[in-house]
Length: 485
Ligand SMILES: Cc1cc2nc3c(=O)[nH]c(=O)nc-3n(C[C@H](O)[C@H](O)[C@H](O)COP(=O)(O)OP(=O)(O)OC[C@H]3O[C@@H](n4cnc5c(N)ncnc54)[C@H](O)[C@@H]3O)c2cc1C
Image (cartoon, rainbow, N blue to C red; front, side, top):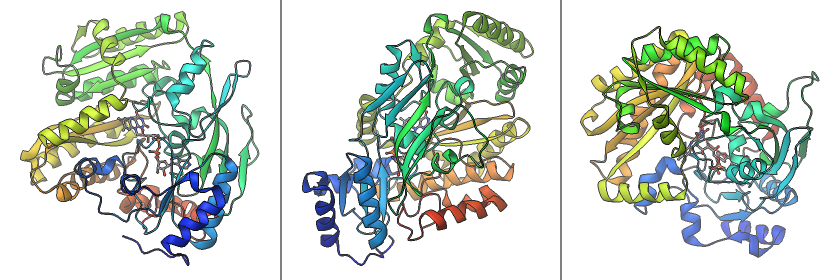
């Protein structure tokens, strides 16, 4: 817990907020406040009704950019910690309110699609628009955002931008950082900045990238404009293969991508991970799969290249219909979150993930080293019910690994994070950094990888620290996120 630095009491903060935005927008319900003190990093404690951290003073519903500016200016003047939020799918502690009397500033009421511009191929949405709502709206015009994180039914544009999210189709469309054309953000002193929508420019450093990925630690994102692409699902083609090991799968993906082809989905699952996802056909092998989309001729050429590249390793074909079926049920809406909660309560078993990235020459070593260390060093390895990984986002220079670990909780719910999640996460992060990879591929640093932020950035940490000092001199933005508390 971090002590509040504010000159105002909890009651004064609540009164001040009600005066600023009206009582109707200030939620003081104790259950809401408790639930707003954590995110999915503490999902097991939360489902057991345990909320140990400081409970926020209020959850404020922001209905406009002006509301955001008023609340941030008030917090800045009175040194009150603010946790921005939108869709609440955060997995890394980014929403935890570690400072007493925090204000949770909720942008989800800002849920207007401002404009769909089919000529200039961009859509503008307020921060609280769920990605799926935006995607459904642009599809009505034969277009797509190309963004498809698994949390698409729930995650909203503000949080997706703030975490540098990436989607299942990223090998073709890129991450959110490749999609954002322009945006609007509010800084702690109430300054509203708009970055205009142009295809490219050379006018100094790109200011979008101060905002994208800031995890609510520098500013509050109120609006974004994203690129649009033509939506042609009728051309989609899937390919699937069983291969002997991760190295073979990774080498095929590398071959396809570095030859210049861009399937939208490129994945290889380790044997253990494949067992979980492809129960009906994995045969205890790794599963390598691709989905190709876009204009028919490009799809045909990409499929030909995949079929050529896979010949370089021993493999067995999988019926593409099985890959299509699996892909159509990959996203997580509230139904799966509720089912997961029921499972955790009944079985005391749960899963977490740690996602890292590295260059092609290092990624296989990171996979082997992390799995080996967990199997040989981790004292509670007997409680693990699954340990595996998959590569799911590939680039010209390398790829990611998404480690997945499930375990039975054989301790008090309050000890679960420190006994299981934190040490397992640490081994994977350490191995990624030791092999000169990145410790976070797409979930954001949140509050549990901050011990390594400086090591991750090396000498470039200077720039990051200066941004924090310059934009948030009173340290009110999401204390403990990206930077240590
Ligand atoms: C089942 C599941 C699947 C997931 N799959 C993916 C995936 O495929 N790809 C992926 O990248 N992520 C994935 N995630 C992680 C998560 O969905 C993303 O990080 C998402 O971008 C968070 O969006 P949100 O609107 O829910 O943000 P929130 O959870 O509300 O917030 C996330 C972070 O952003 C900050 N923030 C939120 N809104 C704003 C704002 N307006 N301005 C400034 N800061 C803000 C918060 O303070 C917090 O630090 C998954 C999560 C779940 C639960």
